[in-house]
Image 1 (cartoon, one colour):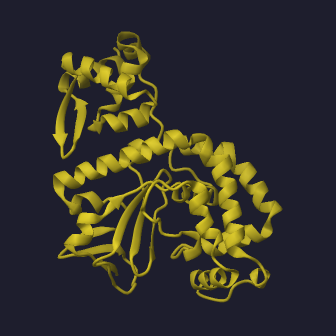
Image 2 (image 1 turned 135 degrees about the vertical axis):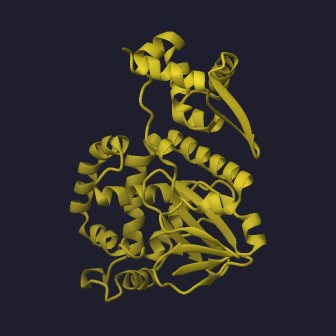
Image 3 (image 1 turned 45 degrees about the horizontal axis):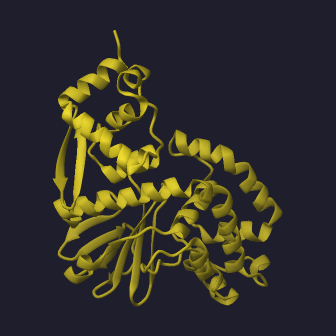
Length: 323
């Protein structure tokens, strides 16, 4: 079992951070997999998968590098550098860290991922440079056009996780981050069911990094930085459906969209991310809905969460299922 031993100081200083490189890496993995987790991802794959496959066909070295670097049980270390956790780095600054690995270092990481020798075709190649070039292509073509909305989504997820942490502690905050991750108590964080040696994270910088795709991973750069990259919550990852037309006519489409989303508690930041509306507009809709008795609000740590009341539920159901 893969266990991380974490002390109170490490947990107290752990941070949720957004990484453009992690998002691009997760998107590259989704393109490589080629199957969608939800309709929104299906539309994104339909738009970018043909060009991605053409890019690999034109660059067989990059195609082989990714095939070797992304394994079911392991990801090559040069491919997933641990975020620095400082400032607000750009994608260009982060991908430069991938490119900085020497060919010999990258081939060593590939051999570990493969648990065997590196293919002969890569012996004279620059695997890190090829991976960085492909990540740059994915970023420019398949991530950057959507980055502002995705950044809002990722930031909204960190708000929700932080609120859950303040409300219920680490056990609830991390138990659904990755399928195999569990807080076991007594300073023990299970990160995998596989038989990996335990790691001592006392005194290190621990980061949690959301991505909008469904693949997550862990990474570290010893001795002082560890990261858990995790898929953000489903309601944030999938674009919201439009509100029922009858409800939109009654309340206006923007306000109706907010009410429909509040089937589960959400913060103002999350609603801004999901709807694409400005903070002021979302705030006005929430005030009107609250004054009408259709939503309630409660504080969770430093966040205020909104959700539908029973009256709000009745209204949404009535216009969604007219007799």
